[in-house]
Image 1 (cartoon, rainbow, N blue to C red):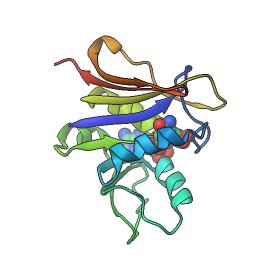
Image 2: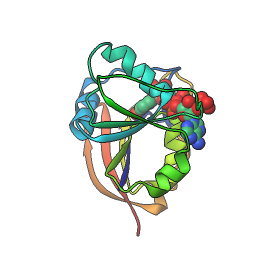
Image 3: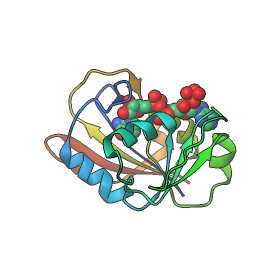
Image 4: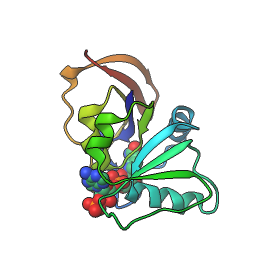
Length: 161
Ligand SMILES: NC(=O)c1ccc[n+]([C@@H]2O[C@H](COP(=O)([O-])OP(=O)(O)OC[C@H]3O[C@@H](n4cnc5c(N)ncnc54)[C@H](OP(=O)(O)O)[C@@H]3O)[C@@H](O)[C@H]2O)c1
């Protein structure tokens, strides 16, 4: 099962350089409640950005896959179990784990065709940034849950079988 989880604003913006364009504490709490201790996949840009936040602490996931096309890049850390993914598409086609794709923009785009579930936090308003989520064909998904707050509409979509 492959789940994508992300927050985007009304322009489908997800990032600004290597940063998230907003700071919404309730969304961070929601994100952590879903991904804590889980098996996650992220791009190297997102990994190094998170490392900057967590510094010498472990990232709050179980196993971490880091995608890159740089075959010389190796991440050796005792803080987390990190496995490099150099060939993302065969990895997505063959992986049978409960995998959470946690960004960033490039990895979301490449993973979207393989997603079984989408956890989308629709952030209200528009923001400054330069990384966008690609167009989503919502006719391929059913909305199975939603919760609306002043700042965010939290949703879960499942792919139509
Ligand atoms: N709003 C959210 O929920 C959310 C969540 C996470 C991250 N973000 C944001 O997303 C942004 C980062 O996104 P990004 O697109 O710059 O970086 P990214 O998706 O984190 O990482 C992209 C990496 O994937 C590599 N790659 C490309 N094709 C590949 C393939 N076929 N196989 C393996 N690896 C491949 C790229 O290699 P090359 O560099 O060599 O091309 C690049 O190193 C940041 O602004 C971050 O804050 C937002």
